[in-house]
Length: 546
Ligand code: NOJ
Image 1 (cartoon, rainbow, N blue to C red):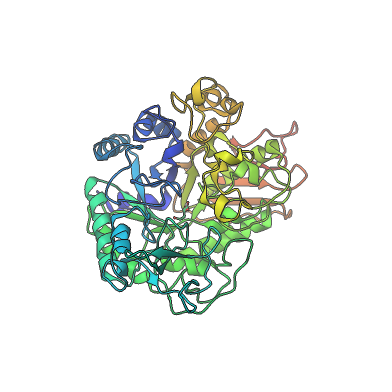
Image 2 (image 1 turned 90 degrees about the vertical axis):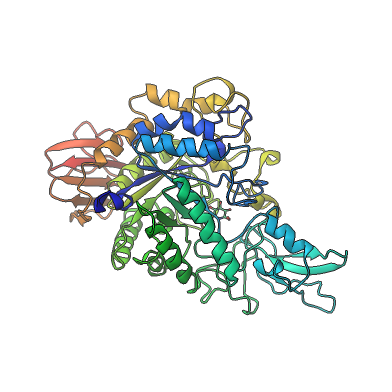
């Protein structure tokens, strides 16, 4: 392979497959590898470069598979290793690369190591793979400190010792069923290098790293203030005891060496909710991870000034370490963009579940989502598309309470509904059982009328979001990848206009009034129609050839 093809990721569009909700090939109501294999031609035709598949490992699915019971196998609900191999071969045959999701911060409580830890004595090597501590108070019946779980409640859970007595406490940043590993233990480090090797040897092209800013902790830190509404105020706590600690970078240097020892080299993408962008850049230094999701951009409000600020900051800060920017509007943890941009208030919030509240105008949201899609795909660097984003699926806000599966719902004392609303199984057909998702129902209920947003309906409508994404992804290949964003001066603060090289211009009107298009030879693509007199209306993006 040439050097350039090793750098494919610098400009790649990566499609996120939330496997449980993508396509059900076995008819049990849950998506799986069989379903994904059937739909590979759809993804190839869409024009993406790679897929990132959310965790498919054996798991009780208490946190959608981010609670892994065995890192070297596949949950029978999703398939098996031979099917995974077939998927890799078929995807590669279509020119699609495959990234998996590695979850190094924690395991499931069903993991063999955790079972061994529970059966062993305090102070044993089995306990030392996780973070066990004695409790506070005379009988040790208070947690070792006041640290909170990201999903709500204490980050500590007490166990019963093998002899039946009340015992030690273990630490979990997320759900109680997700005990954190102790990354100061060399055995844990060696184990994960071996897990990476296992999948790389199978032919996997890279990994998205879950909670890449976790893993390394300073358990000697004292109690910290927290916000009762739920999340720890992560970035605002300086020297946070369990997020974004400097020690994590040494781990990634070792991981990078491993990835580079393969031909072709393998890739890592960091999921790191850190601020400010300078902290994120540290993860993508040239001997660490390759790229990182740009959550600053995801959280930006639908406003010209905020988007421009985020674009400029991201590009500049990442360029300082030689890394490309990435652009992301959706994933399985945040509200769908049609809904988010359909709210009056689009202001940013935290990274988990809802970003804002207030009534939603889906028609408006979809209109803006089209414009946002074209803006994102016109920017230099990599881009991510979350399954269903190309169909304009909204967040399902009214899932019945008894259907909710996200642990956030219970752990927040039923105050936060969690992230199920963006995980509702995809509609593939206008009618039929589970709208073509599978042959028999779907693990989360799909709303009535979901079929109107299906792939089948979108195929038949030349003006659909799907056709827009397909065309944009095709045309994007002609935008000179190496050309940076070169802002065009327009005397309207609500308009974003930039050039990439000499021949391509992108203009977005975020203001209330239509605006004239800059000089151009040809309109290449529009997210919505021009006015009768050829002006660019509100919330509309144009790609122009100049
Ligand atoms: C981030 C993942 O995207 C999210 O879905 C999960 O709940 C947490 N990490 C914990 O693994």
